[in-house]
Length: 301
Length: 272
Image (cartoon, rainbow over all chains, first blue to last red):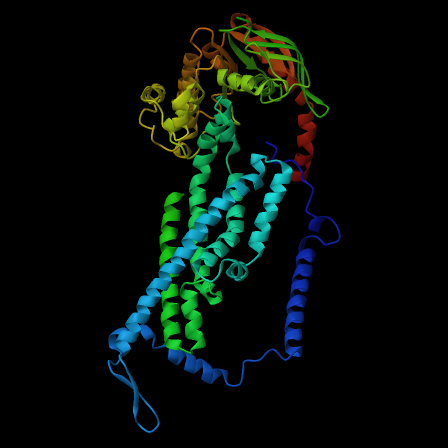
């Protein structure tokens, strides 16, 4: 009915910027200029370099990755002898036992990663829900509260999980708790935005109809609003949770526990075959959860 | 009991344009009134005004013994909503709830105490569920109770909205073109159901009617409107076809001179 009302055009189309095809061409020109500027400064500073022998390094790395360490748990030598230059045996190692215990450590770290993502996501969703209800325009929260909530969500979205993690490790100490809180603080912004959007896409004509029967405000909420937004909330929750599983795999790099801790260990000790194992686990974990969450989200629509 | 609807000196305006100008209108409990008139006559605005969806710029709007306006207390406003049943285009079913749950929404305001709390979890007393199923069955939707509202056809949705009204048991029913976009069979069913809901003693039915053939089904009194004003208001028996037609002719007569001058340049362009 009021959808055809003329709204003021956005500033870009109104004033100093050319319209239509010329406007788009100018936009492309500005973009090309930016890219050229970035490239030119990079070259001028002498930073565009691939190192001394990139091909050898690449081949070596691929070779290291080609034999992931977990294979040793079944096929490795049972007596690996470390000898000094003159031939005396320094140490004997059962590779199968060593790698089996590493795999157990990987399993524990995977669980910790999952823990961080799961608890962090839930905490974020719970914190974001009231904020989203303030931000959603169609619920008509008082303006100052809406602005404050929007500010909180914007800040939380702007600061990366790793940055929150670094700050929190300093506050609550090393370990998964810092990871959970870091995930929660960053994802709160994402959840808030997604939740607010699904509340705004609500069919208000249906909500009005429920109110028109004389139902109380709580009844209006649970019959008009909740049934429409709940499936979307669950879908968004799975989506962000999926993201956080990916994010929490690197949180260990800054000491927040989980797979990231093992990754940073493997990198600092140049154990590329173990790094290969860890990456396989990360990819498998993320892919499995992606597939599962996609299935559930399709069912919900 | 006082009148169901009492308007005096009412004006509704959008900006400078007066949409509705009704010096006096009185509708008694139990009356069945149809509002007819061309597009833009103010029929829907009148219905929305009485339903509390539109505010009057001036005048007194009394509905079921309460005066509408900003001064109306929240509790009174809610009681009025409960007693006024709306069937309008701007009101939808809740898309993800089943037909039965949508019907049960009509009964929410009737629930008290523990039942009202349980209703938040969509847990209803057995007799209400039976009542909802019966209301659906009467409208031929007995087997659609579990279907989600967004999977129903337009006609079925209208019937579900009617069944909801039946559970709401309003004292005043306001229906805005309840049969538009329905096929003839559905039109008959909806009209009969609407009359049935309004049949209980003391219930008032106010319908905006487009299809003049439906008048005998829905009304005993006809209000003819044009340009935001009431042109006539009389019992159905005294509303002759010529009188009804005159409402629409007034508009076509105004529009007629414009039509040729509008279309002739196009013809000239086409032949040139």
